[in-house]
Image (cartoon, rainbow, N blue to C red; front, side):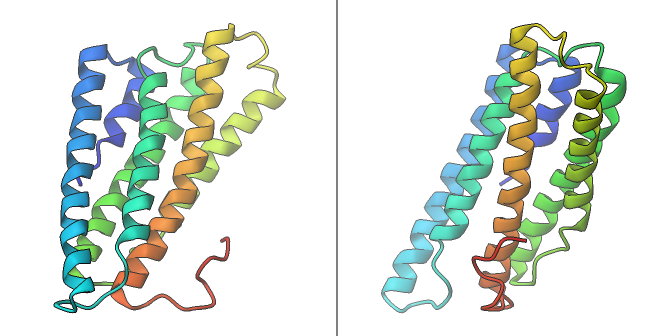
Length: 191
Protein backbone atom coordinates (compact mmCIF):
# COMPACT_ATOMS: atom_id res chain seq x y z
CA UNK A 1 0.00 0.00 0.00
CA UNK A 2 1.56 3.29 -1.09
CA UNK A 3 1.83 5.91 1.64
CA UNK A 4 -0.16 9.04 0.74
CA UNK A 5 -0.34 10.52 4.21
CA UNK A 6 2.50 12.88 3.40
CA UNK A 7 0.30 14.57 0.78
CA UNK A 8 -2.48 14.93 3.34
CA UNK A 9 -0.12 16.40 5.94
CA UNK A 10 1.16 18.86 3.33
CA UNK A 11 -2.47 19.88 2.84
CA UNK A 12 -2.53 21.10 6.42
CA UNK A 13 -0.11 23.88 5.51
CA UNK A 14 -1.34 24.56 1.96
CA UNK A 15 -4.91 23.29 1.92
CA UNK A 16 -6.26 20.60 -0.39
CA UNK A 17 -9.09 21.06 -2.81
CA UNK A 18 -11.87 18.53 -2.42
CA UNK A 19 -11.04 16.84 -5.72
CA UNK A 20 -7.39 16.27 -4.71
CA UNK A 21 -8.50 15.02 -1.31
CA UNK A 22 -10.88 12.52 -2.90
CA UNK A 23 -8.17 11.32 -5.29
CA UNK A 24 -5.77 10.73 -2.40
CA UNK A 25 -8.38 9.08 -0.18
CA UNK A 26 -9.63 6.91 -3.06
CA UNK A 27 -6.07 5.78 -3.76
CA UNK A 28 -5.61 4.85 -0.11
CA UNK A 29 -8.93 3.00 -0.11
CA UNK A 30 -8.06 1.08 -3.29
CA UNK A 31 -4.68 0.08 -1.87
CA UNK A 32 -6.35 -1.16 1.31
CA UNK A 33 -8.86 -3.19 -0.72
CA UNK A 34 -5.91 -4.79 -2.55
CA UNK A 35 -4.15 -5.58 0.74
CA UNK A 36 -7.37 -7.12 2.09
CA UNK A 37 -7.69 -9.34 -0.99
CA UNK A 38 -4.10 -10.53 -0.56
CA UNK A 39 -4.71 -11.02 3.18
CA UNK A 40 -7.86 -13.05 2.55
CA UNK A 41 -5.96 -15.27 0.11
CA UNK A 42 -3.17 -15.75 2.67
CA UNK A 43 -5.76 -16.73 5.29
CA UNK A 44 -7.32 -19.31 2.93
CA UNK A 45 -3.88 -20.80 2.30
CA UNK A 46 -3.13 -20.78 6.02
CA UNK A 47 -6.45 -22.39 6.95
CA UNK A 48 -5.93 -25.19 4.42
CA UNK A 49 -2.34 -25.61 5.60
CA UNK A 50 -0.93 -24.68 2.18
CA UNK A 51 1.07 -21.97 3.92
CA UNK A 52 2.22 -21.22 7.43
CA UNK A 53 2.49 -17.94 9.23
CA UNK A 54 0.71 -15.67 11.63
CA UNK A 55 -2.88 -14.55 11.28
CA UNK A 56 -3.18 -11.61 8.87
CA UNK A 57 -6.07 -10.10 10.86
CA UNK A 58 -3.97 -7.93 13.21
CA UNK A 59 -1.97 -6.48 10.30
CA UNK A 60 -5.09 -5.73 8.26
CA UNK A 61 -6.84 -4.13 11.25
CA UNK A 62 -3.78 -1.97 11.95
CA UNK A 63 -3.68 -0.79 8.34
CA UNK A 64 -7.40 0.00 8.52
CA UNK A 65 -6.83 2.08 11.68
CA UNK A 66 -4.04 3.96 9.90
CA UNK A 67 -6.45 4.66 7.06
CA UNK A 68 -9.02 6.02 9.52
CA UNK A 69 -6.34 8.33 10.95
CA UNK A 70 -5.63 9.58 7.44
CA UNK A 71 -9.34 10.22 6.88
CA UNK A 72 -9.35 12.50 9.93
CA UNK A 73 -6.27 14.33 8.65
CA UNK A 74 -7.79 14.58 5.18
CA UNK A 75 -10.92 16.20 6.53
CA UNK A 76 -8.82 18.74 8.37
CA UNK A 77 -6.58 19.37 5.34
CA UNK A 78 -9.25 20.91 3.12
CA UNK A 79 -8.47 24.20 4.86
CA UNK A 80 -4.92 25.00 5.97
CA UNK A 81 -4.27 25.25 9.68
CA UNK A 82 -4.37 28.86 10.96
CA UNK A 83 -1.77 31.09 9.32
CA UNK A 84 -0.72 32.41 12.72
CA UNK A 85 0.49 28.91 13.68
CA UNK A 86 2.14 27.94 10.39
CA UNK A 87 5.61 29.33 11.21
CA UNK A 88 5.69 26.97 14.18
CA UNK A 89 3.89 23.94 12.71
CA UNK A 90 5.14 23.69 9.11
CA UNK A 91 8.52 22.15 9.92
CA UNK A 92 7.24 19.69 12.58
CA UNK A 93 4.44 18.58 10.21
CA UNK A 94 6.94 18.07 7.40
CA UNK A 95 9.15 15.96 9.71
CA UNK A 96 6.16 13.88 10.79
CA UNK A 97 5.15 13.37 7.16
CA UNK A 98 8.66 12.29 6.17
CA UNK A 99 9.15 10.00 9.17
CA UNK A 100 5.74 8.36 8.73
CA UNK A 101 6.27 7.93 4.96
CA UNK A 102 9.76 6.51 5.43
CA UNK A 103 8.53 4.05 8.06
CA UNK A 104 5.58 2.96 5.97
CA UNK A 105 7.84 2.37 2.96
CA UNK A 106 10.50 0.52 5.00
CA UNK A 107 7.83 -1.46 6.85
CA UNK A 108 6.27 -2.55 3.56
CA UNK A 109 9.67 -3.67 2.29
CA UNK A 110 10.28 -5.57 5.54
CA UNK A 111 6.90 -7.31 5.24
CA UNK A 112 7.57 -8.34 1.65
CA UNK A 113 11.04 -9.65 2.51
CA UNK A 114 9.99 -11.31 5.78
CA UNK A 115 12.48 -9.16 7.71
CA UNK A 116 12.29 -7.56 11.13
CA UNK A 117 10.56 -4.18 11.31
CA UNK A 118 12.56 -1.03 10.73
CA UNK A 119 13.39 1.06 13.81
CA UNK A 120 10.55 3.27 14.98
CA UNK A 121 12.86 5.94 16.42
CA UNK A 122 12.38 8.57 13.70
CA UNK A 123 8.57 8.21 13.90
CA UNK A 124 8.63 8.60 17.66
CA UNK A 125 11.02 11.56 17.53
CA UNK A 126 8.92 13.37 14.90
CA UNK A 127 5.64 12.70 16.75
CA UNK A 128 7.19 13.83 20.03
CA UNK A 129 8.58 17.00 18.44
CA UNK A 130 5.15 17.85 16.99
CA UNK A 131 3.47 17.19 20.35
CA UNK A 132 6.06 19.37 22.09
CA UNK A 133 5.38 22.23 19.68
CA UNK A 134 1.63 21.88 20.25
CA UNK A 135 2.19 21.95 24.02
CA UNK A 136 4.34 25.09 23.64
CA UNK A 137 1.66 26.81 21.52
CA UNK A 138 -0.96 25.98 24.13
CA UNK A 139 1.25 27.17 27.03
CA UNK A 140 1.81 30.44 25.22
CA UNK A 141 -1.95 30.85 24.81
CA UNK A 142 -1.78 30.94 21.01
CA UNK A 143 -4.65 28.50 20.59
CA UNK A 144 -7.13 30.42 22.75
CA UNK A 145 -8.02 32.94 20.07
CA UNK A 146 -8.63 30.38 17.34
CA UNK A 147 -12.12 30.40 15.83
CA UNK A 148 -14.11 27.28 16.69
CA UNK A 149 -13.67 25.52 13.33
CA UNK A 150 -9.92 26.23 13.27
CA UNK A 151 -9.51 24.97 16.84
CA UNK A 152 -11.46 21.85 15.95
CA UNK A 153 -9.17 21.08 12.98
CA UNK A 154 -6.05 21.93 15.02
CA UNK A 155 -6.94 19.48 17.82
CA UNK A 156 -8.26 16.82 15.40
CA UNK A 157 -4.89 16.77 13.65
CA UNK A 158 -3.06 16.41 16.96
CA UNK A 159 -5.37 13.56 17.96
CA UNK A 160 -4.96 11.81 14.59
CA UNK A 161 -1.16 12.07 14.70
CA UNK A 162 -1.12 10.68 18.22
CA UNK A 163 -3.32 7.79 17.10
CA UNK A 164 -1.11 7.20 14.07
CA UNK A 165 1.97 7.00 16.26
CA UNK A 166 0.27 4.31 18.33
CA UNK A 167 -0.85 2.51 15.19
CA UNK A 168 2.71 2.58 13.84
CA UNK A 169 3.77 0.83 17.06
CA UNK A 170 1.14 -1.81 16.30
CA UNK A 171 2.40 -2.02 12.72
CA UNK A 172 5.92 -2.59 14.05
CA UNK A 173 4.60 -5.45 16.19
CA UNK A 174 2.71 -6.96 13.24
CA UNK A 175 5.80 -6.83 11.03
CA UNK A 176 7.85 -8.46 13.77
CA UNK A 177 5.25 -11.22 14.18
CA UNK A 178 5.21 -11.91 10.45
CA UNK A 179 9.02 -12.06 10.44
CA UNK A 180 9.00 -14.33 13.48
CA UNK A 181 11.02 -11.84 15.53
CA UNK A 182 8.36 -10.73 17.99
CA UNK A 183 9.14 -11.61 21.56
CA UNK A 184 6.22 -12.80 23.69
CA UNK A 185 7.04 -10.30 26.44
CA UNK A 186 6.53 -7.38 24.03
CA UNK A 187 3.19 -8.46 22.62
CA UNK A 188 0.31 -6.41 23.91
CA UNK A 189 2.47 -4.27 26.15
CA UNK A 190 2.41 -0.51 25.61
CA UNK A 191 5.70 1.08 24.57
